[in-house]
Length: 150
Image (cartoon, rainbow, N blue to C red):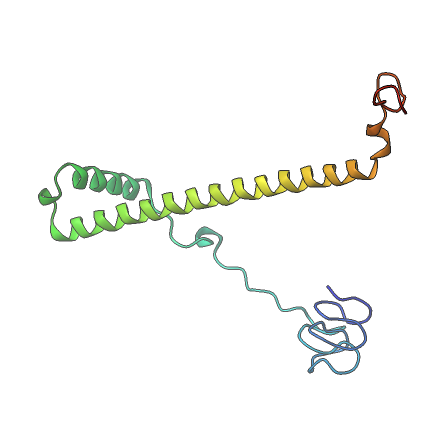
C-alpha cells in the first residue's frame, strides 16, 4: 500500500504510515510508522523452535484425555472432583471446536453461493448487452415473424 518515496500504508511524498527517510508523524517525505532508508527493520526474535506453538500435548496426555472423556460419558460419579472438572472442560472445548468448525463451513458455503450468484448475474448482464443476437432465430438466422410479418 502506498508508493512513491514513502512505502507502506499511506506512503507517497506526503507521509502517512510508511517510512522512507525516517519516522515522524507523516509530515514531509514519507514520515510515519516504519523504518526509513538505512534504518534496520525490526523483526521479532525467533523463539525456541521446539515450542513455537506453545506446549504440545504428548501421546500420554492425549490418551489420558480420551480416557477421561469416556469415563465421564459412562459414569461421571466414578471420577474424582478434579478429574470430573477436567473432563467437563475437555468436552466443552470439543463442543466449541465443533461449533467453530461448523460455523466456518457454513461461512464457506455462503461465500461460495455468493460467488456463484455474482457470476450468474455477470453472465446475465453480459447476455443483456447482446440482446440483438438472441432475438434472431438461431436455426434460420432470420428475425422471428408474427403471422408472417417481419
